[in-house]
Length: 449
Ligand SMILES: [Fe+2]
Image: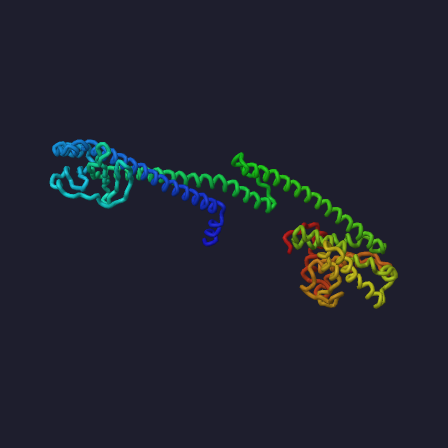
């Protein structure tokens, strides 16, 4: 589970999604801040403009009444201004000493009214607009006649309607952004799928190619990834084709190699006319034992080549020993016995032949440990060497020698059985006897191990 989570965090899809979502978040946040600031500015500007208009209107209306001291006229101006807009809370006309000469609230007439503190939103020669802490806008507009300052018009405007309009606009902005965010996430999903889909397909294709199998990948698009997939398909087809061709060459090389070995073995056997064809016959007999043991095909091939090579060391055995028509002296025997080690030295020269050394070196070992060159016994004797030992002895006994007549196959088989457990591995002797007898009785052998 932890590994799966780790793979998820390391996946291109995850990294791609994080980057795109991060960028989407930054963009959305920036857009949100910009939009809210814009809305705030627009609505504030609209409110200030409306308040300025109201203030100027009140100041203009009150100018001549204030100049002539027409209190009824001022009351009329105040009443009309108060009634002109639902958002106007109060209207006052002040003289130059800030004393209310007219007020929409009659109780405040005659009071000195100073503009309250707040955030100054605008100011020019026509007056100022201030936002109070209670959200109301306070407008102070000078009343002038022919350039002479007569007093001020002071208005309190309720900002509730503006605030509600502003909040409504903000809600609309948030809804729009929420929809944009959902669409953005959906877009990220589709985008990552369209990018990671072909990459996953390519990854699977590489694994198949690595395993030596050909897999034609599905091309999802006509963009760079689609082109990459098409190129991969062409490349994998080429690799598989070349691999098949190389396998064919390897097979031909293997056949050529085995043919060369057969020629070499025949050349070695031909040094002694009495052993002509010996290695090939040993291979035939050994393979019969190998088949009866149900050895794998590859091991049977190795066993056959090992048989062809088993006496390769005799290429260094002097003629006076190899071709001696009588029994060998002890010195001559030791000279002859060296062919197992000489064979080892010859095979060591070629890395591809090293695997045959155990069979070649030990095919004269005895099961009881009294053979040569290393005195191995029992299971320590390599299997191929133990099999070749039986086949080699059987063929030697049934072949003509200058100093003796060949033994019959039955006699040779009897000798093999007699030496079971001393010279030969009893398990392979038992198999060999069964193979030999079944062949003579014409019965196919099956299921022997
Ligand atoms: Fe030998």
